[in-house]
Length: 72
Length: 257
Image 1 (cartoon, rainbow over the protein chains, first blue to last red):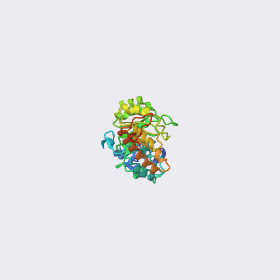
Image 2 (image 1 turned 90 degrees about the vertical axis):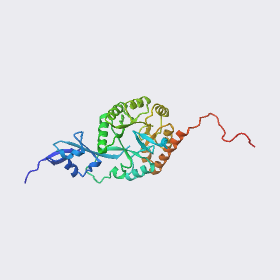
Image 3 (image 1 turned 45 degrees about the vertical axis):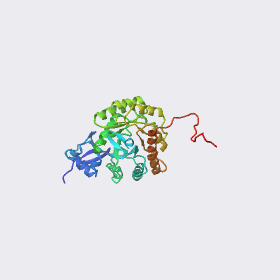
Image 4 (image 1 turned 120 degrees about the vertical axis):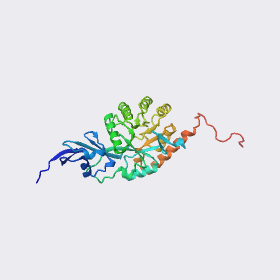
């Protein structure tokens, strides 16, 4: 069996192991995140949601996905 | 009536009451209280999506951002960097440019850190944001915020969540007299009459969260605040009588039998 290389990334502060060469769009889909209702940061830089498919995740990438919640 | 329209950054609102969406027992309770309050603007916070529990209810499922204006807020930010990051993310969620800036300086009294607030207001305005600014009730600082492009001045009545009501009416009056920008009392109100007082001082609106969300009966309190704001506005526009030290009879003194 072919060995799948996995890399470590962080999503909202939690460590996740993903396949090497995973696109950011696939990760978002896998996590079932409603893209229209969130904003995404990759290593503290805002990601254009139209370009999610063009971003290939690298080892130690830090992703933040935020949305609106109740607040004062 | 035009005088009953609240205008902020060229947007018009019929209600002069803005409500927060925090501290409610449930999203359902929050949505119902907002409906009863008549508010057309609600403040919201920007936080991480819970990636492990996807069944958690979403605010947008209860409060439709197409019907109610979301006002992203930087509550919980303690410096300019955090506040800017939060609001840039908020804009990215769906084009929100009208935002509420709140940079806190002390974890206990929650007073605003005005140096960082001023700095952030200037940067955000340059980036095209329409910034409604939470600030202390200092007329000089309010003027400086206006000078760097704030879209609304939002002085506190008292510390956030304290319920103490308006502590410094004179300062609020001075700020009112010096600015044509929307003046909205933000934070510290405890009961509906506090909102009436704010409106009678000439404020353009009030922002309330805890006083409604944590009232024993939030729905009734939402209704009370709605009416209190309307009452205060009408009272302000009606021209109150002068105060007299002595009594002045309401019935004619002539023709008394």
